Image 1 (cartoon, rainbow, N blue to C red):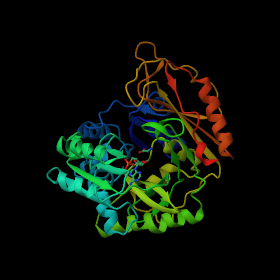
Image 2: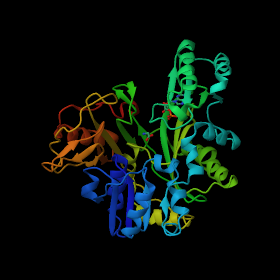
Image 3: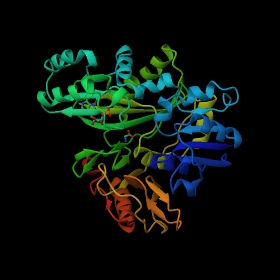
Image 4: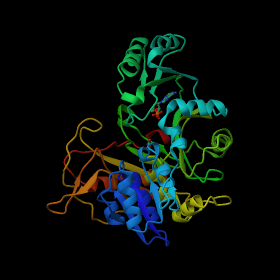
Length: 426
Ligand code: AMP
Ligand code: GLY
């Protein structure tokens, strides 16, 4: 089959790497991709906001399936766009339609959905711009810290946790009254703060049946000991020790199945990944958020543990034939360390030459913010997150040691990493 995978991060390189091991792949295109996906497959320079351009490429290159990595094209309706066109209708897109992508695209929709279907999540209320004073009043009925969330996609910056009322009042002003995130903060969700350890759980579903992928934990803060600003993710590990059989049973029975049943009940078709951002509160899982895609850098730890053929699973999803499918998963532990640019998640320089990429490592190098320099054909940095280094070993300690050893052999100006990935799991 000819496949087009949309996206350009470490997540997409990990998916491309896994797909490239499937016997059924003829051509694997990644748009726009990065320096790493350009080695695993063929990069194509497409604008993911330009669905017409994607359509043209798909038709001209006999693409048999499109796989969507990031949420934005899904929330913008790429699936609906393909389904509305006679020529592309027959080409399956792995990813949900716009109506289902609201699970990620609108926090208010997701919270109301969970409430309708009895799925455990923090208590909440939603407010619009004309309800700012009611929002302030609601705050006063709650205990700190206060969790405020812009309703729409806000590039990962839409969630603010305030320790006192003055700060929270100010946030209401910024988000609701001054529309800091434009349309995304036309509505504001205020919710109860939940205290516990977070983990990421993933399924692949055809809208009726689902298979559970390996769970993972990501490390979001820039600083060691989980301090400092939130990033896209500085590392990940899979499996997660506290996600034992008993806990995962609760996840399946209280969260995953009710989510699928809810989608069916509301006539919302779904083909693709669901990412449950969960928090473990006294051994009970609660949903912090839904995402309609895989996590990054979780995917970089998840894919290497999947033994089954990923393309076969995607075909089953496309044919709505996932019932009875099983996933073979390695018992080993995967540990991913992300190398970032100095200054990230704030401003940082691009274009630094990356050295040491071509050695034989006991790790998998998944590229994120890398590109091939036009002038000399060298691989240079092009983003905040540069590389995700994943190693697999029987024990977490060993996997981490391998990833850190590989990390020490790669160099570029401003190379920055957290040296404590997995620290909380020993
Ligand atoms: P989200 O974008 O919804 O994943 O939120 C970003 C981060 O904020 C989460 O990963 C949590 O660490 C934190 N967070 C969100 N909602 C809550 C909550 N209700 N209680 C505690 N922490 C939260
Ligand atoms: N690592 C969290 C995310 O992908 O949203």
